[in-house]
Length: 189
Image 1: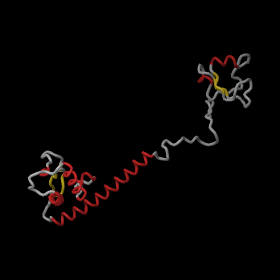
Image 2 (image 1 turned 120 degrees about the vertical axis):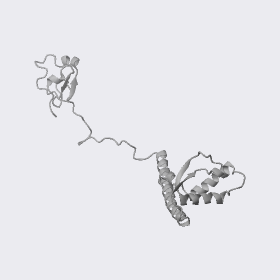
Image 3 (image 1 turned 45 degrees about the vertical axis):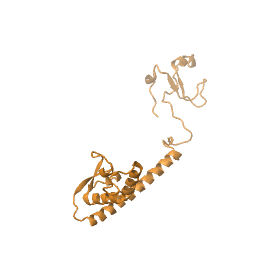
Image 4 (image 1 turned 45 degrees about the horizontal axis):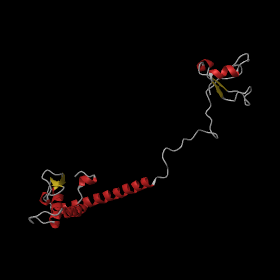
């Protein structure tokens, strides 16, 4: 600790580091405000005689540096544990869907060897009631043909009617669980 010159503490008060026992009623390490200085040092020849002005010492229990408490609770709350489990489950599903996409893409390329390039695929096929300006995804042509054939197996062309909304949702879940859209699982085709 470096002693602080008395001039730096003028007007603020005085920090007194007295010997243990703190003679004259002054506790060791006391910080005296200007009002109390006159009362404590009244009658003394020199108020700062024998006293050393220093910065206050940071006291702690025990020796060594102070350890800060951890910022985060090491034991997760039930909501945090549930969110982590959900995130891990979602990651497992995504990884499984990526493997399935690679497998289905190879099968489609083997089935349609002359299909090169890319085509736009409507998320909700237009013949099933999807809008012409609806969401589309760019897919390899062979993979797009495989998805189209899967939709045709679930709901054939030319029926003259469209599926009910619940049936449409079921068809889409069945097809996209077999043929995942690569952009939705983090793969750019």
